[in-house]
Structures are given as C-alpha cells and as structure tokens.
Image (cartoon, rainbow, N blue to C red; front, side, top):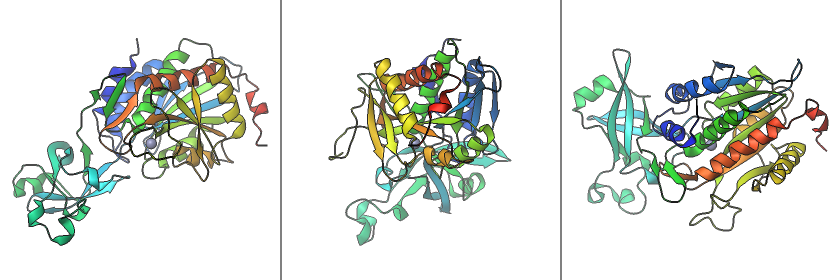
Length: 357
Ligand SMILES: [Zn+2]
C-alpha cells in the first residue's frame, strides 16, 4: 500500500467521532493502521492501538505514540417544537456557532440516522434585551433540521450528539482547513511515522494509539497507558500557530516549525533527546512551554502506572476549536518524520539515559 497523507487526513475530517462516540473515526483509521502494523486492537474506552514489533531481542522496550482522535461538538439537551436545544461536548465557543452546518446523529429502530441541520438564532429584533447586542448567549441557539416537530420527536432524543458538517478544504499554500484538525493532524503525522517505520529497522516495539475522549479529560490515554505499559511515550497534539489577535504569547509560524513542549508533563531527558534528533536531521523544532500541566493527553499518560516519561510534540494550528481550523501539511509530515527518525535510532538501552535530574 502506498500511504498518501492528504487524502487520508481529508477522509478523517469528513467523519464525526465526538468524544465518547469515536466509532466512525476509528473505522477510518483502522484499515490504514492494519496495513502498517502487525496487530491492532481497541481498548475498553474505544482507543485504537496498533503494534509494530521491533527487531531487538525480547523482552523488547516499548514506545507508545499517543494522538487523540476524538472531536469536540454539541449535544441535544431538549426539543422545542421540533427545534433542538444544545450544549457542548468538549470546549466549543458558542460565538462561532450561529450559521454552522451540522449533522444530528439521531436514531430509528436502533439504527443511527444522520440528519442534516444548522445552528440558528432568532432574528435580533425578536430577542429579549440580553440577546440584542454582542455575541448571542448559547441559551438562544437552536438546531433546525427542517423536519416537522413530530418527526423530530421520533428520530432525536436528548443526549444525541451533533457534529460539525464543515467539509475539509485545501487552501492555497500547502494549508488545509477543516473541523477536528485538532487532533487528526497528529493522527495523520503518527500514520506518516508508521509508514516510514514500516520500511526501516527499529529495535523497539512501537505502539501507535489513537486515543478517545481527550477533549473531555484524557480518559482514553489513561486506560491505554495501563494497557500498553510503555517505557516512555510520545504525545502529539496541536498548538497555537501565529495568527491575528494572538498577542505576545509564544506562538509558532505555521509551516515553518513543529514544537517540543517544556513543562511539568515533559521529561527533560526526552526533551533533550528529541531536540538532538531534530538538530541532526535538520527538522525545525521550536520550544513550547507549559508551566503547569499541558492540557493534552501528556498529563494522563504521565501519571499512569508509576509515572511514564513523556515527550510532547505540537503541530501549529490556527483557529483552534472552531470548524475551520487550519494546519500546514508540511508541519504534519515534519512531525511524522521526526517521530520515525527518533524511534528508528533508539538503542535498546536508551532508558538508561532517561533520568529526571
Ligand atoms: Zn487536541
């Protein structure tokens, strides 16, 4: 199989897979990872695991690559005259919601029914005073499916999820836009690494994990860490790219670099080893920082077992947690290549050099 990153990433952006409801995205990733690994299995919390055996003598050390596959979105909290009241799954800013095309995941006779719809708001002059100026409070937002009230009552229940229906869009200049590039860009990078490693010698066992439920608390990553018991882990997620309104915070030029996080979740010796590999292969790797926890799966992996050493990579992304996130494909490939170079150069006794000093 020849693996092509762009069509694969776009196919991942065309499915829902909200946190806790990852089956649809897992079904897209599974056949690709099956081709690139020796064995795949699904964790009790729905994370996808792919094992690539190394060539070292047993018992071999193990490295886990964790990239979350779940998406933020919405959930039905009530039905009023056929219109759906909504809340959030993960962190969605309600200011970006009005006018968004969405898919309501209802059911009929036990089968899932996908209903097209959109987030709507009443005209401003019909709203009470607190809704007439500025961003509209979420309590006024509704989803309209176009169906009559009695049909909606049959197909939709409170607790059904609603996903963004934005289609991926190739922009000019090596950039791609779509919903859930956080963090499917990293799943694509991980797959790029698996593809490279399938043609390389590597002594270590490599287990790729597309984790579930990161956006609601790192739940999949925690369970997978215990399931796999890796010697150390690479956690890859997106980070803030430079863009309008970013201020003076440390932000990264999309398309120019990927990041290596320095903070309490990140093992200093692994940070240095990753940096050394990036320097050797001339892969730009900027320092990101996370002084009190990282807000990614890194924390949940780090505190599993007796504590798993973690190194954390980031792909710069614009417009995080909106339906039009943007990444550079160059950065996605860079991250994949760096992970593959790092892993294929791991000596069997590498962990002897990993000390927290
Ligand atoms: Zn993320």
